[in-house]
Length: 562
Image (cartoon, rainbow, N blue to C red; front, top):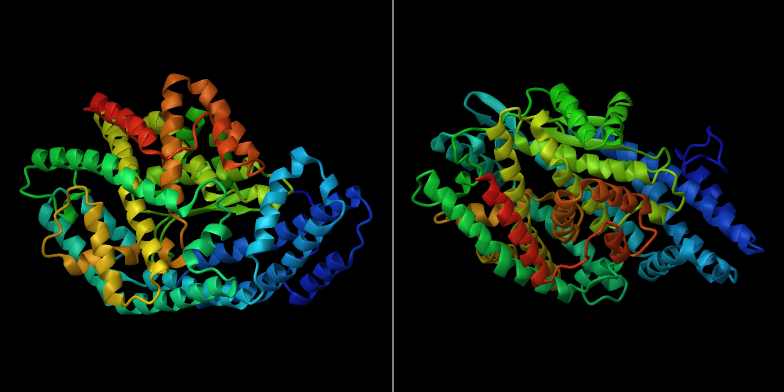
């Protein structure tokens, strides 16, 4: 986004400067529809500048999570400048919405913008701003706690992310020892994490009540602008996955158990290789990047050159190290139109998938770089995750860059397909858990543990947890979304269905599917979710029938690989 209204020297480092600009906007007279469009454009330019400044502070905080000055810098910026910006943004949005010239805005350009604007105004509550600042500070503590966990294993010290590689070892005793070490380490932080979550729960319930919502679940459904489905639709989604996907995965896991000759499949066996071979796609961050660029270029030259550009600009931090926050993300850089990819690669196949996933997000960011309406650049998760998850599948046939051996290549594809299926029961577990938490906010920690174990049993895909009740109750503590971005999870399952649909189309007509993929990326959020999915060539549908159709397609793909 080029600056039209603000010079290159303008920065948002001081609250006074931001307040001055916001007050200018609030006092501005709007005398016709042309001036209204200019007003909207100027506000969005200022918003992009603020968002990109915040982005870099967040990136530094997560890259160096063990250095408190970065978290302090981010929290100070969020608690002052972002809080002030959010407060005055409501009044600016209200001014736009109430303008007599709003009805004259070109319908084709502004239809979805006005819908989003109306929802943002309706959900805003000034009393919630200090609560959101506090929530942000607390949720950031999760990454700090997890990043400081180091585990001594066979004479070396490892992060939680690095320990995951040992769960793929052929030696079952090594896998079990690593798994138990992980949960011993998490268990040592259990009380601290539970206390942190209780503080977050209290804040979130208060936010919902401040806006006269009966519960935080319904508040967040509205806050996320979920116009296309209801919470009750999600209960049906849970049930469909339980009846369609869980039995298929039980069948797959039973074949695995028999093949590796185990009496039962224990939690430390789920990542074990059936053929005794561990995929090792790369040895270094440099190799991961080079092969990733090549694989994306094989799909389309433009895709690979985008990742190469990000590398040249140092918009990548891919390798796991001590002191880094957990997880991975693509952070859009709203003003420059670029993006930053953050990962914790440790040399396993999952890292290849994560890079392709985050590259899909990055392509989405670059595709909307010229979009000046921030509400169109900021796509809902159902759309954002469709871009990333589809790239996992679209790139899959090009993974020979990582696996020159044909058997390794087939193994990688098989892991991707099974991994996609495994997404569904875990997402349902997390989503159903959050529904229960926020519909029953007065629960105890013991009741919370009990409910989570119940859901783990409901969506169990054939894993034997006998004698591991304590560990089973702690699995959710490793899921950062529950702490940091509540109710941002069901979108992964919705988008996974869409991604499988795109992959099915890609198998039939690669060229047309890629065109439709880029077409939907360029839309941002300028159209409804349903229309965006239609542009991508798929249905926005999570009915039992559609899930069955796509699950059967993946089952056939697996059979071809066996």
